[in-house]
Amino acid sequence: MTRHLHALVLLAGLAAPGVGGAQTVQNATLRRAQQAYDNLEYRQVVSLARAALRERLTGPERARAYELLGFTYGALDSILKAVDAFKQVVLIDPERQLDPNRVSPKAYSAFDVALRQVLLVRQLRVDSASFVGGRGAVPIRFTVTQPARVVTRAIGGGSYVIDSGAWNGQVNLSWPARLANGDPVPAGNYTVVVEARLGQNTFSAAQPIRVSHGSVDTLQALTSLPGYQYLPETEVPPQSWRPLGLAFLYTGGALIGTLGLESSSLGSSSKRELAVVGGAALVTGFVMTLRKPAPRPAAANILYNRLLRDQIARRNQDIAKENVARRQQVQLTLVPLPKPSAGPR
Amino acid sequence: MSRAAAGVALLVLAAPAAAAQRVSVIVGPQFALASYREVASGLRYQGTGFGGAVSARYRKLSAEAGVVRLTLDPAAGSAATSGFTATEVNAWVAYDVATYASVEAGFIRRTADPEFDAQSVGAVRLGARSFYEIGPGATVLFRANYLAAPKFSGGGHARFSIDLGLGLDVRLAGRLHGTAGYTFQRINRKTDPGGTGEIDAPIQGTEARVGLAIAL
Image (cartoon, rainbow over all chains, first blue to last red; front, side, top):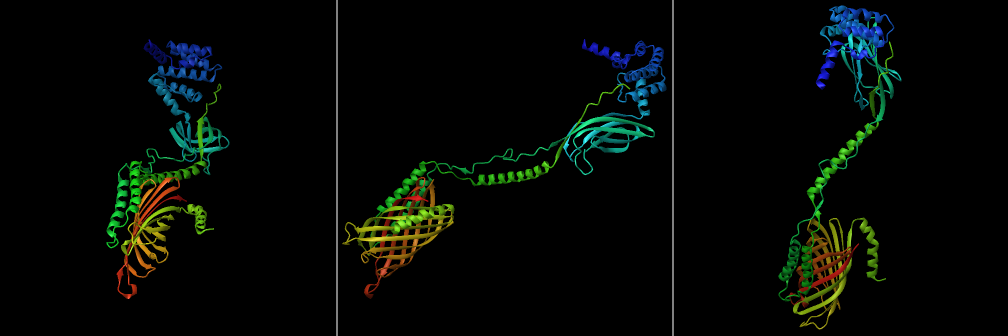
């Protein structure tokens, strides 16, 4: 069902190009001309469309009348007349486009020739953009149908020349939105005006935009580096008999020294003093063996943490410098505004 | 005011300054046991006494001093007929040459009362010590000192004099420390009474000190 509907719409498009425009047609003569075109009565289309053009028509109706003439002359192989009719169409509606898949090749080529014989600025587009002042630009695109001297301006609080040059065809410009002294253009509403001049012929197109200023986001200071974490600077060694062993060693040293140095003539000295202190040392060693060992500095971890802290400090210094610069910058946001609705021509 | 009270007052006053300079000071009283032999195996004494010790450390420098007053009585089977009182003062200044070792110098002075009941001795200490923290707040110490240029109240000289020590310092709770120290002393004194020829008059003593101390 959906396929059938699509096919029907396609056929209708081929048979009656610009059917959408027929909905706004108020003029009775023009409606009859459209009807005659739908019935393939081309001679009648020509007389009716010309009659309608002599009447009072709105801009779209006038464009529609010339478009019917263009298609009809194309169908009648009167290419020059078709071109003339299409020239009138694009002069009234410069943005008019024909779909090459929906119109006859003769009509399309006549339309294309007409476009190249008239000086137009078409398809002016200003893209949305947001950038730090001085570090970006807003893209501006348009098409000039004939080689011409083209001046592009932004007109708002003042008039700023964006570009001036000889162009033909598709033109891509970028506007940094800066004044001559490097400052960003003041915030506000502007109109990008593209004016093409070729001899005595001129044509211009316009697109309103809004320029707003904002502060540039500053960077947060780092407290850690992603993927890198501080390591504990102390480690608890595994429990061991070392404390008791050391107590034995030191007490044994004192005992051996005492025994070895005792005078033979004075006899063996009292050992109760050594027993008291040595016993206390051994008991202390035994208790310390049973206790959880004291945490000791982990040299490798301390070194690693120091390197990490140094790295973070260096990064934060860079961030601080960057933030100082960012606080002096302006975030420019340019947004195209809808064009004011075109009144009757 | 007694000298001891004046000393304690001075330490208390000096404590905040010491803490500000990151100087660790430990001071406290000690109970002592001692045995003493002189000249011959028959002349031996044993006794007890009280004293005090103070030690301080600033980075690699450390100092230690102690005074003890011992009442020594003739031991069982001794040929001595009466006892005497000995007052011993020791002091050291040490410098750490490694994580567990330091060299030290100081002096010893032991006086006897009555004066002629035992030899009074004074000498310079030169030596080294090793210390190791065997657990949280527990340190053992072993010391060997050569007693240089000894002087005796009864005259004479000693070419070989040595002093060995074992020490223990345990932090019991907070600032309260338990301290213990052992000293073995051997002095090969030789004397020439009346010009009749040099004879051996060795001195040998052991001493144990146990006490409590406060870290300032």
